[in-house]
Figure 1 (cartoon, rainbow over the protein chains, first blue to last red):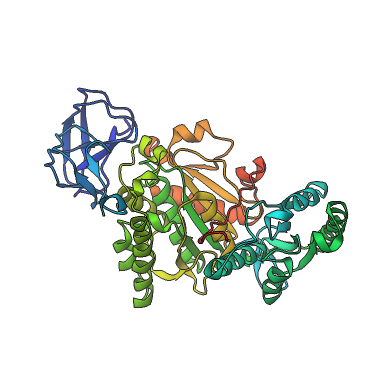
Figure 2 (figure 1 turned 90 degrees about the horizontal axis):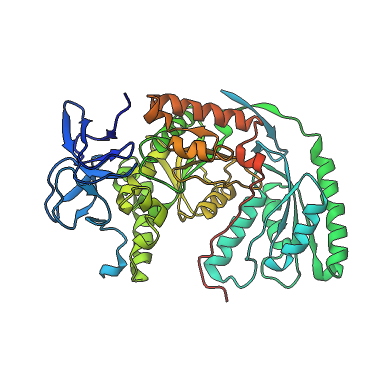
Amino acid sequence: MPQSAIVVDKKDNVATALRQLELGESVRVELEEHSIDVTLLQTIPFGHKFSLKDIELGEPIIKYGEVIGLATRKVMKGEHVHVHNVEGVRGRGDKQ
Amino acid sequence: MKFWGYHRSNGSIGIRNHVLVFPTVICASTVAQMISKEVPGTVCVNHPHGCGHLGEEKEHMIRAMAGFCGNPNVAGVLLVGLGCELLTPQLIAEELHKTGQRVETISIQAIGGTTDAVAKGKELVKKLLKETASVKRELIDVSELILGTHCGGSDTLSGLTANPALGVACDLLVSEGGTAMISETAEMLGAEHILAKRAANDEVRRRIWEITSLTEANVKLMGVDIRGTEPSPGNIEGGLTTLEEKSLGSIRKGGTSAVMQVVKYAEKPSQKGLVIMDGPAHDVVSDTGMIAAGAQVIVFTTGRGTPLGSPIAPVIKVSSNSIVYHRMKENIDINAGVILDSGESIQSVGEQIFKEIIDVASGKLTKAEIMGHHEFAIHPIGPTV
C-alpha cells in the first residue's frame, strides 16, 4: 500500500501528506529507525504538512532536517502546519 | 558518453539548428515577426527592451541579447533594428562577431519602412536557411553539454520527487564532465549555507553569500514581505509554507556536486561542473538567462504544471506528481510522481531524466517543441529612462 505521508529527515517535526488525509484519520509515518502514529486534528490537503509532535510558539519547524520557519502559535501533534501557524524569517522587508 | 549534435565552425556545440530573427529593440518587433512568419523554418522572439538602458543595465541587456543570439543552437541570426535605438543590430552583431556567430543585420529606417524591411529580411533569412540546412549531426562528447535547470510552479512534492531526481541527472552529467546550472537566487535564501559548504573555493563561497545577501537586501530595501511572491500564491495552495522550505527543495535539483563558479545573469561559465547563475526566480526570465549563458537544453521541474518552452532550446518538463502529469500530459515529458505512487526510486527517475537529456540533445523533440512554445523574457535591472 502506498505511503500516506512522507518525512524527509529524521530531525523533521512535520510530515507531507501524499494524498488528502481526513480529520480523525490515524496515519503511521515512517522515520529512519522508528515510526510515529499521528491522529489528524484537521483535514490535510494533498501536498500539505502536519505536525509530528506538539510544537511551542516560536519553535522552529524542521523539514529536510533544516529550519523552514518558526511557529507563530502553539501547534498540536496532528495539526495542519501552514501559513496560518508558521512564518518564514528570510526576505521580510515588512519587519524592518 | 556521446550524443548527436552540431559542431559549429566556431567550435561551439549545438543541439538544434535554428535560424533566429531577433529584434534588438521593441520598435522592430512587428517587422521581425512578419519576416519570421513568412519564412517557415525560422524562429522569432518578442521583448520590450533595446532603448533607455543606462550603465550596468545596458551591459546586462547587451550580454543577454548577444548571449541568446550566440547560443550554439542558433545556426544563424538576423538582427532587426529600427535605427535610432540604443542597442542597434550593429552593436549586438559586434559582440556576436567576437564569438564567430553567423549574423546578418537590417535597420528599418535605413531601408525605408516596413514593406522593404520585411522583403530584405526575408531574403537574408532565406540565405541563412540555405547555408545552415546542410549541417549534419556528429557524435559529440556529453561533456560539451550545458544543462540549465529550473523549478517553476512548485508544490511541496517538487522538493521530494522531481527536484532530487533532476539532482541525480545533474550529478550524472557532471560526472561525465558536463556542466549543470542552477539559478533562482531568491530560492537559495534559507539554503545558501548548504551550497556554500559545497563551494569549490573561497571565492565561490564568498560569491554565494554575496548574491543571496544582495537579493535579500533588495527585498528589504523595498520594505516588503517576500512572501508576496515567494512562495507564490500557487506554491502556497500546493502546500509550500515559507521561502526557506521552497529554497531547501529548490536547490536539490542541482544535485550534490561541488559548486565550481557563480556567474552573472546570461554570463557564460568558464568552468565545467555545477555552476550557479545569479538570476531571478521568474520562470521565463531564468530560462532565457541560462540559454543566453550557453545552455543548449533546459530541464524544468513543476508541481503545478506549465507549458513553457523556448524558441531556440528544448525544455524538458518533469512533473513532481502524477495528478499534474496526467492533467497536462501534452506539456510534460517525464513524471517524477512515480517516486511516490509506484515506488520508483529517485535514482532511477534521475537516470531516466539523464537519458532523456541525451536523447533530446540528439534530436528528440520535447513536448514544448511539439506544442510550439516559444517563451522569451529578459528582466530589466534598472529604470527605463
